[in-house]
Image (cartoon, rainbow, N blue to C red; front, side, top):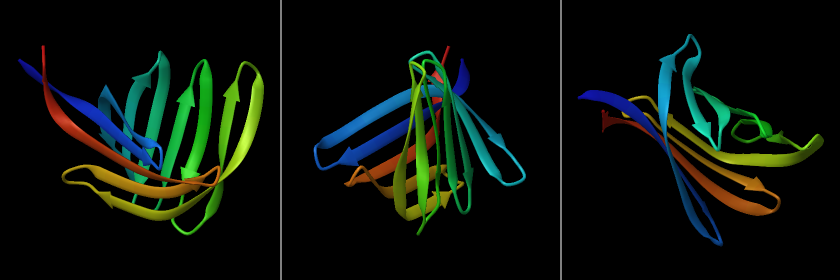
Length: 125
């Protein structure tokens, strides 16, 4: 049996919690770590450094965002040819390489969001 990597994203808001899991690849870069995975047939990329998270999704639903602690940045969303840009303020950014773990707390559309990302080895065929 070969071991693979599994991405786990847990998002918490006042309304509740969601969890997303996907097979992924993890690549060390000069600046940090790149995580590639698929979500609903779209290609997704997370670039994690010691100071920021860059999130990209390309496909039927495209998005891009950079989360930087203490800063308001723009969350860009494109679907069916229509685009929107929404301010997002990141208050907490914690990144640990071993084990790979990232925690964000940010405000998006006036709602506080807790975002927890981990990548772990998983048993696969």
